[in-house]
Length: 533
Image (cartoon, rainbow, N blue to C red; front, side, top):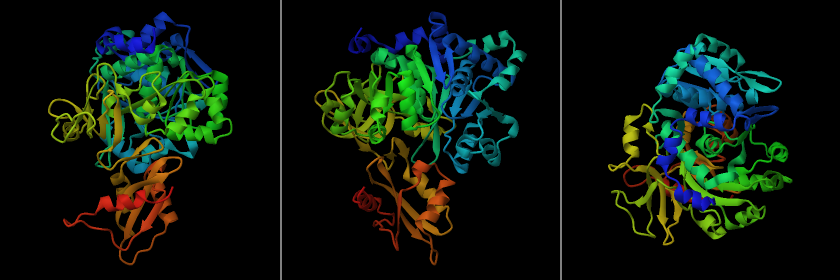
């Protein structure tokens, strides 16, 4: 069946009936194709039978440690088999898995841990020179909650923790799994909001499974294998890559970091067929010697998003012969929610984000929720089975995220063309994307203002050759204070993730004001946009 035929016959209801939870999907594959490879991590190769056995052992150990339905269990790890086993095990017993961004710093760890209140946190030590157990203890996490994933010659292992599985009866494990409801939150994905503080989007089994199933329907055999080197706390890694390949029954190839040369060698060895990328990702591949050839020679399907991709770049990518699709989505929609059809022209892929997935209702609305006519810009709003339940422990933010008739306010602007394809215009508020990552100016401004020399800061995006946009900070110092770029940059690196740190700074005597006394952000944004890349 062609991708177009598969997508036309797909319905979220039929997918839900086939596998209502992440564990049900694992059982289906382990039963139907037990000897097929499910995961690869270095020299380790797990079949679906192996994967189920490891998930069962970890799930039993979690039950033995007192983890119950609704509890949160967090992972602070690079992409690896242990992350995948933990996610499937935690969600299988009705608890909620949380990924913590490895590049977070102290204040970010503190906020996520305070908000989520995890029962256990699994982590590694020595990754990229970071002492994660020590950092977690430094922000007040009870050491008894920290589970260290040991590392041997073949990579991280959960052997010590799973020894506790013998203390949990099979009846207790079966009862925990039987109690899982498809509306339970399988995962909480933290994404920053306009308040500048990360918000935890609760993604239900229903939403995660429906999204994965619809992706498997239209992506088809392209999902046979994919490399996951993206941060596992990100919806792109969890849903767009891992869950989509998992729903198809393919193999996930884990690699701990984005290293174009190493990923090229890995691609040559493992022949991945599916790639999730962005304009930044494409540029990095083409900038590296033989990088594009190594990553794309075996690829059969490429989906890309995160920013508008120029047609000239798509022409270079299309020369490798893979099917391609421009996609759009966000954390709150479980990732992909619109796509351009396989076989669409390069013009359509460069100019649009395609059409909604089956079952998704997408409208372009004005401030009052009224649908805008074709060709007129408004907010992109989404409703349907792929949308989050809400933000964890943030009822006010949840209420603000939805319209009165149940549509998710994405905060993004777009319009619909006469041919039915949607066009992404920009962000409704001040957020910008840097290398595919969302950057929220207020969060960065707050971190800058933590420096004792700073009185006020405004951050706006400026052009960048590789990352499309990066932050530029306009700073007013306190009277008599002095500060230079490098000192401030080092100060920020200890407080926020590296991609959030502005790439340039301007120290201003005064900042422009509006008549109401507020900072004139529009003027500063224009000044930043006029800076050369």
